[in-house]
Amino acid sequence: MAAHIAEAREQHGRGPSWRSLSERFDWTVAELAGVLEYLAQRGVVTYTDAAYSLGLGATPPEDLPPTLTGLSAQEQRDAVAWVSTYDRRVGGSPTASQLRGAFHWSGEEYLGHMRSLVDLGLLRYAAVDGTLRVGQAAPRAWTQRTDE
Image (cartoon, rainbow, N blue to C red; front, side):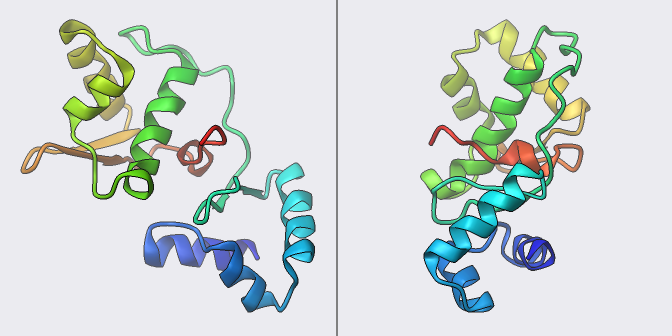
């Protein structure tokens, strides 16, 4: 199952739906829920109730140091998760100014925080259109939000 989830995320930029997993493995929804809960408890997959929410990986470490601009580990995870789930929630890729507005960063905070997130490889900034994407250094578990 983990290999199938990874393949779907690679091909489509998001995890498979519960329905496609149920069909792929010929499981009822109840059976699938049990398997996902078992795998999530062991850190093999992450998931929420959203339609395209399956990911791989364990919970990210809690003891990450804050950035030089003062972003805590939780704030770093939240920014990456917000950018990652933007397409599913709104459509398309968010701009840097939309991220700033979502987190209510002041002008000075915004520039420093964005630079830190990009320098750490957690986010990628496309200067051509001003959009953001999740960077290579962001653990897959960071791209899932359980509060949506």
